[in-house]
Image (cartoon, rainbow, N blue to C red; front, side):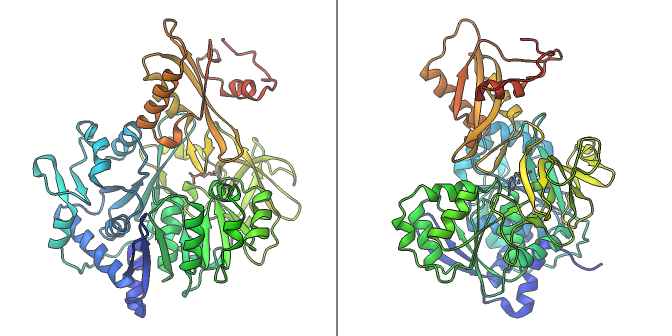
Length: 535
Ligand code: AMP
């Protein structure tokens, strides 16, 4: 069996090609301290981590999660886990207890790699996670009674060579949970064979060349952070800048300039934040090495492209994909004329279509369901423990993405929206159901309905309609209490930007929250057919 192992491709294969001494990761922490790791370092650190897992009898068939901010250990643990042929899931460091419980509980993860400050959240739910045998603390010591392992100790004891067993293309690899509009988040499972799509698009869309310095700002908790912040670029032997600090316009410009970044992959909200800054920051930036800027996650407004052309003297190429697709499916790219506002054209080997609800192809210019002909290498293999929902996404050889779009006569695709109630805030998909569930845990809240409303910066903001039990009154303190609760239970990004206190939540006769009606109410529009409305 030939070896399709993603982690071998990112490390051992690069060393075999003679790149062991080449910088794989230029790590810069939030304070600006810098440390270079070569492909040889990535190889030995991930080997050690693989051996550490093996010493705990963790391997093929197991699920290991990382719950870390961007930091070197994130990358070593991800690659080391894949070397053992265990599945690696990644958790966004802002997740709250309920979000963690849903994901770790549903997946039956046996091991979690985290740090002390984040472990506090896990410790509070640990007894509800019977499958979770080990917690590896990157900044902690052994605590055998609680199944806690000190990273430094276990890595020091682990050998630096590791023989990766042949890994088939269908062997499961990466797990990301994604939010739907109903039910709990779904575990999107990928396979090692996804590497083919991630490599191909890193070449044909991102245009990565071996001597490039590349910076992807996405967090490793999301698919962009793994497919294009780890896998594709390293499997091509490209040097990646990994920056552990947050958004700060001047720092970002300094990084692009000083680190001589050639290819930069970011997101519309971050780019819109830059657009709001003083123009002098960009006028003084010297970016002779910067070749291309890419964006993903939300619609890219034409104004952002115009701003970048004027101040950064570069185009921004929009790309479209989702957790389930594992790699970029539709994109703008050098060599293809940009139509500002369009997501671009299909990538090689990808066949998208805009289908009506009856499955017929919509004429050009008409809106419909954005679908993809099945069979590309990085297509997800299932929703973990949820085969029926997985099956419902496919019809007649088409995968239904949940997005609506239109195609123009020249074959460009234009994003129109979601066909469900999922909210896209700053590129993060938020389930209204998850926020509603968290809201109902607040003592004062009787009912709630959560919608996404247009926002100039975030694309959409989370708006919560809240009906209180009769004995309670709305107040500023209560608003704060509600916000804090959602942040602790779900995540800070799911926290409502706006809370609207109301006397009733519209529901249909079977008790389903009519978010469409709430949205129309919020926007001051006609709610359409409300004949099935209860309240
Ligand atoms: P996720 O699975 O969290 O990566 O989110 C994928 C979803 O984000 C897609 O289904 C779209 O709704 C949205 N999305 C991603 N890229 C774009 C884009 N370039 N333009 C518009 N929406 C996008």
